[in-house]
Image (cartoon, rainbow, N blue to C red; front, top):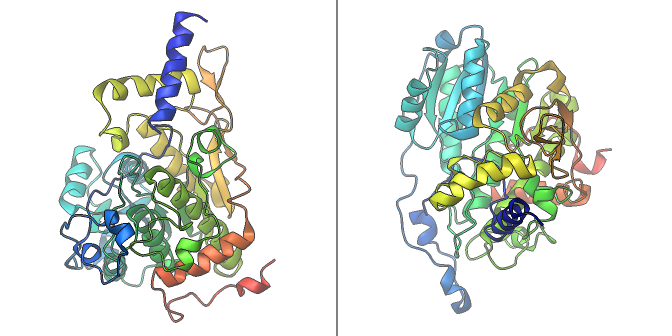
Length: 422
């Protein structure tokens, strides 16, 4: 084995051992709510180690903006969560620069969102920044109320659920305002509530689309999801069936694992898209889709890693696995799913350049291709058997209604009952 190959093998082992192969460069939430820390749940002695320090939680609703219809004009209206960094920022930038979209930047830190829009030269009157704390179900409801006040009678045409947290190094779970493990709360439940509260509004729009960002790590038929442990596995949903709140940290009811919690949440994201499509596409006309943008190895996702890792990992992804894609290209891919007529088909998991089901192979250019990295054409990717488990998806979806606090009155009345779906 040559010295170069030995170095690459060593790097591969380091990647697996640090669980850095997990992809999706999104917004990391790093707080624990006062509500969760002082929860009324009775914590057994054996689970006292799961208790966490108290950090201020979501406390106040942002004042609503009004008269947004004047600013929006004839453009399509799109909400992008996590739009102040990484994939979400680049997607928002691509959409506003097209001149066809007015973007609602849904972010935790409004001041940061405004600064980012200015730094990256978002055209004036092409966006507005609104507060959204996905770790608080009340904040999600407040955001929806403010959005409706801003846009008035104009329907929302596109919703991009991008923001997420990834906490693989945390030895103990963090808890949301509502008492849920943070990955579950932000990545799944917050977005689940957001989508369901906006369905009745979106169905009024022509050509409406809802995109929830997926990940290869939630697909066990990929290199990152099938070969890098821990694998995503919802088990029999015992954690969800037991209420999913502190001290229950995992949806399968087992012991906490930060990397697995993220992967499980992405499985639920992709299941949610499939179930939304089955229940509501025909009756509402909304296109529901998921996508994998590629590995954005230079994302802030890895900001807690050591400097040497942050320098070497992008090179490893570029020249060994072939899964590397830059932030701008990844954002353009997400924007393509929002805008391209090709992506008007509902219930699809979109990918590029091989979809990361194999490690890249070298072509005439001297760079590996086929692993979901830079370049290539968009195509309909195949989801894993776990993601396509229909019975599991239906149960997960119905349990999520309860955990997200969605009442019968709030559920959209369109679409057949689950038992009658084909």
